[in-house]
Length: 244
Image (cartoon, rainbow, N blue to C red; front, side, top):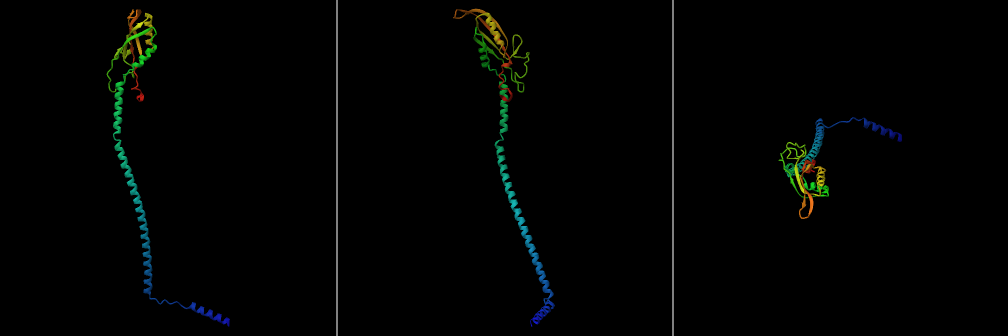
């Protein structure tokens, strides 16, 4: 019984599987369905493309905004720097004025002699048996020519020197001393002390006479002597390198 039932079921399944499939839809309907599917595919592709274009546009717009912001920031910095440049526009002029003033100062003070230093050195070397009661300094100033070397920076031509010593030493000034010495030999010692000063040349005496020192009752040698001051006496503090 069961064998027959199984055989019958198998026969029915085989018959159902073997039955032909019949498409009852008209060809026009199937074609229309395919066209609808195609249109859906095209629309979906269009939507996807539009979405991609939108994303690209959004990214490009964001980059454009960032670029615009960077440009605005750069323009702001440029404007600030231009304002600072305008603030310092006078600086080159000021530097030029300072340089011109320094040049004028150098020219005006190139012949400076600090006689206080010379006299201090002299006071430290004057012999004990000699004393002075007066001195006279004469310093003729040569005219300063713009662009010319400062005095003392080149050898002095004796033929054009404003001062010339008795023995031909060129100088820039002369000093005449008047005073007393206890003896004539002390006058010689005094002249010898002058030769030891680096800025002095050609010391000499014009008078050397024994006489009574007024109001003392003491006899001493009254002398008048002179010395030539050389260009080594120039201070050079306005003509040295770097203005030192």
